[in-house]
Length: 202
Image 1 (tube, rainbow, N blue to C red):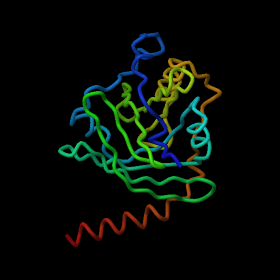
Image 2: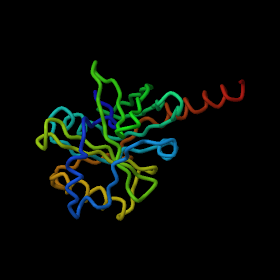
Image 3: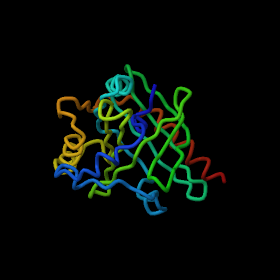
Image 4: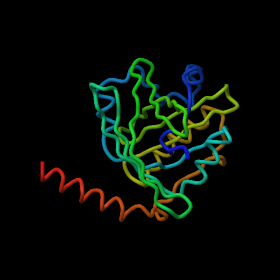
């Protein structure tokens, strides 16, 4: 199953260049700097997404709740990803690495035997970000939204809705996560206790 952060492929930048009113608050990050990576560091919650691509749309609809940690490795142009995803009333944990293509503002990961690419979009709120998708043109556009808390403010949500409008997707096509359905709390707590013991022992 495609991970929620990676529910995006290829580039949305040509669409953003149209500079429609709905796109004015979006910033396509290129190049990605160490400061950008530091902004992404830490815990994030998957809030919602909308995709025209059938594969990603199906994956997004199966996600009940998800959160993850980004741990940037500046010198390696990588981000260590630790993700907790609730799907079909089960908790699924995954640990992997994300490749950072600094020059063109793209992140990528391998999933299901192929590489998935996502364009990083920063909003005016430092505690939220988006990943964009455009696969084979407008027919398969999409976008996913993340925040440092499981619930966002109305202002933060509006930025996401404006971005969705920018790429021509209707608000009714958005799939949202539900923190109340999260089943990964116990496993997350176990992992955090193990990490703490490792740090104390080192």
